[in-house]
Length: 221
Image (cartoon, rainbow, N blue to C red; front, top):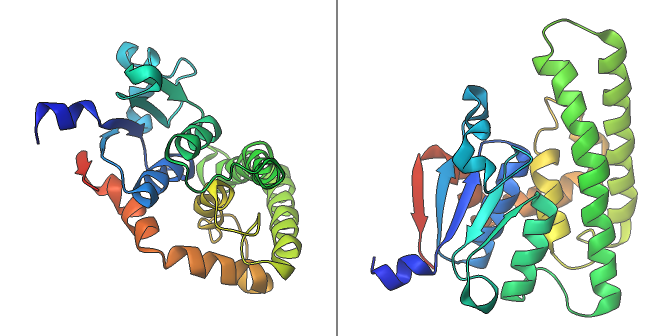
């Protein structure tokens, strides 16, 4: 790869979590050049000074777009902000029509503030807590069930959350993918199950989920 091509790369800093997969999937869907850097949160690599300069909240994912606005590099953290930025930059999976954009935005923020947050707590109490806390398990499992129900109703008359496949679907998919660990039965949500299977079958989604199998990944469009 030439030096000029390297200057066009997007540097992706992520780990094998739902939030990390949001961005690897988005980059694969866009078909753009990127290089992945695995940040092992189990080894506290997210607290390394070099990473904190990119992501001051010490969370993955984060990106550095070497060809950012005005041709200058830009670093971004927060998965929702990254998805919006990439959608705007490449004019893909994020509409420009304000009505359609508002629809995508509300479901993107629903994921960030609702589905992701509650599912993350659910995973913690069900899988990672150092002691069993039945109240936490019950509370967050019930809330994820409710949120799955919200998606089920939304998908009753449309194939995707905002009508067309968008960053809202990309944001939600990696969390729904954890349904067994979240104590859910996806067959109880047939519309959601159909949505999940449709997205899971997309080649770019499959590549995005496989991106974390290598310490350093370069994908070419």
